[in-house]
Image (cartoon, rainbow over all chains, first blue to last red; front, side, top):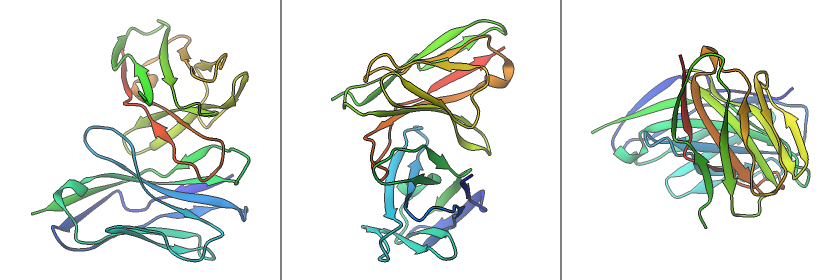
Length: 116
Length: 113
């Protein structure tokens, strides 16, 4: 069975600095997708970034980028120029398959605090 | 589009009561799912559906039932509420392809006394 592990329950960063959130996963599949979701205090889940396993290039969305290491099964999120609005819970998630839908599996989350 | 809607937003039940959490989406998504979120445990999948008439169990299905009679609706039924079911419940939907973003509802905070 696939699993997703986030080993950092809490992280903190100074405004304008860079922080990296860790995520590892376990799977025997070769075709899958990885996601980072953000959950601010409003409780709304927001997609931050996604990575296709078949792509070697790391995904980037503005200040958010990932370091995808397929052999190591590692998928970390880097937030550059951190802003107060980045404070939230961040969840790493895994989903198998391309055309066949499968369930989305989440890690336990990392709470990010941003200090001014 | 309203996206994914959930009702109610808050609910208090007594042990043994039953209730249904409603979830609807207007994006014609084939895939719908229910999660519960508990402190320190992330989001755990309860049940999911890949289309009308098709449902399957997730990680923590005990004590919950689902059905999918239409593409739009995916209600979650608590058969006999227990304090261990106190949680925040999220409904989500997406297109079938694995790369597709899951759209989440606003959540329901359920307390079982």
